[in-house]
Image (cartoon, rainbow, N blue to C red):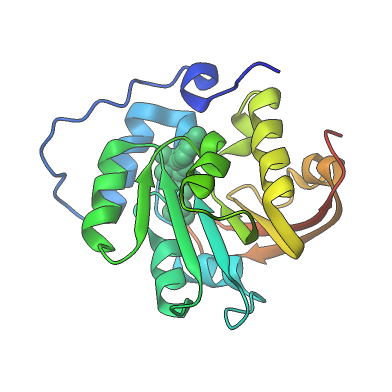
Length: 212
Ligand SMILES: C[S@@+](CC[C@H](N)C(=O)[O-])C[C@H]1O[C@@H](n2cnc3c(N)ncnc32)[C@H](O)[C@@H]1O
């Protein structure tokens, strides 16, 4: 099977950075990234706290051993995760863009933030001796990924998920991709989040059945 990576398949602007930390608020950094990188960023503003809470609703942080966040941006969901996880839960946060990742590392020095491609998150977990994940929280722009790349990420998530685990996917196009995710999972619930810019929601998926 060919190795699919976002950098190879998405043909995004190279991950260059000036080397200087970006100043200004999160919304300004996201807007600049959206302007320069378009569909690999997919959203022009950081998620609201309502979106972050909806992403995490129902997760039992008392029993979860590992939670992975894919495509963390400036960290609105990371912030909510950091508020909720205890010392017994391993949190791994992955972001491909170096400037966004730099901001995450500066903001959350206490957690494991990796600049890398979400396609390889199983290897990042293996490096840390982790074989199972309780929940995968993704804000990746999966619908705009080429199908083989999207399937690599979904299949990897499914393989790593513990029994009862969930794959959670953020969207800023409410319900538009419901059928897409139903093609991959037996059980897909959609939570609408009106208080977000733009309004969006979260798909909570269980029971991977392969490409639809
Ligand atoms: C829609 S933004 C969401 C940002 C943040 N989670 C939020 O809710 O505001 C999607 C993020 O996914 C990141 N991303 C895109 N492709 C990625 C990949 N292959 N691996 C890791 N991160 C990726 C982008 O750089 C961007 O920060």
